[in-house]
Image (cartoon, rainbow, N blue to C red; front, side, top):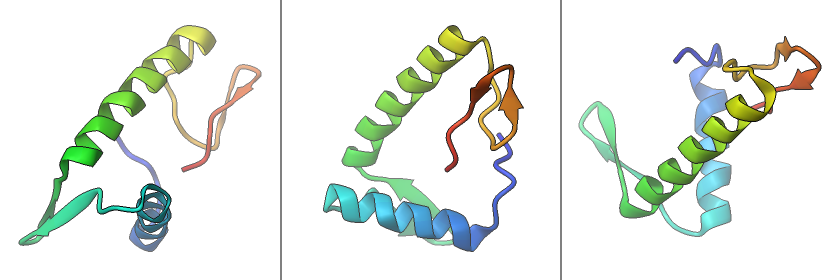
Length: 75
């Protein structure tokens, strides 16, 4: 899925999310990352939230663009 966001913007949002949870959500693994147990849980909740959003709005697009009359959340 393309987010059309710059890497520093994504890193900043991830940092805020980790600060909110009070624990790391991912670990650096060479050139990539590995999810922690906390992030695995968060991912499951986020996927269910996205599925509910799609069912409710009929919109599978997660961007700043409008989808019908609903406005998708900004990440």
